[in-house]
Image 1 (spheres, rainbow, N blue to C red):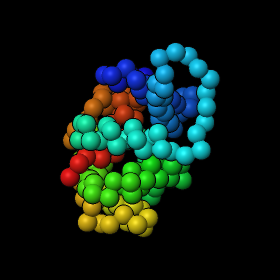
Image 2 (cartoon, one colour):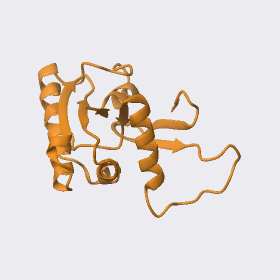
Image 3 (cartoon, one colour):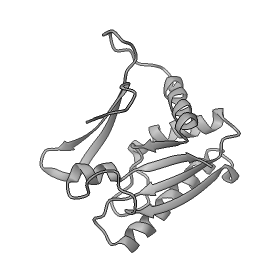
Image 4 (cartoon, rainbow, N blue to C red):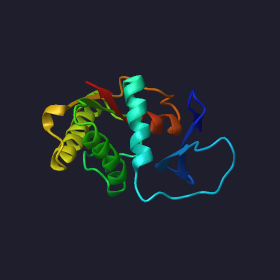
Length: 169
């Protein structure tokens, strides 16, 4: 688990028992300074506002929740909620241009990781274009395992390194 610098978001990775190839990512956001009941929202407006604020303030978003079938660029079904948030962010901010960067862990050769990360960014761009985002607003880069943010010798670190980043372009 990791708390962001502002202390208002907790990110974590969870696994399925001893199966280290199956994991999930979750994020909790602080809504108030006092405990309150949980409420579900009918829309993702708060999430879009958070993404917009973070992207505009730091110039970059680290995105977990866009997953691919193992060793492919095929987007998994559970990724569409996250992709819809990105789509909605770009629909709301029609002047935003973003670069999509895909990162991998270091379990494959650098060439394979680099090729796979490039194909994965292309899949994301194609998805967003299919939803009406002009391709001219999107650029992509696959960087493989060149820029880890966690320890690649442990499975949690490798899971953290498998990420998508959006940056202002």
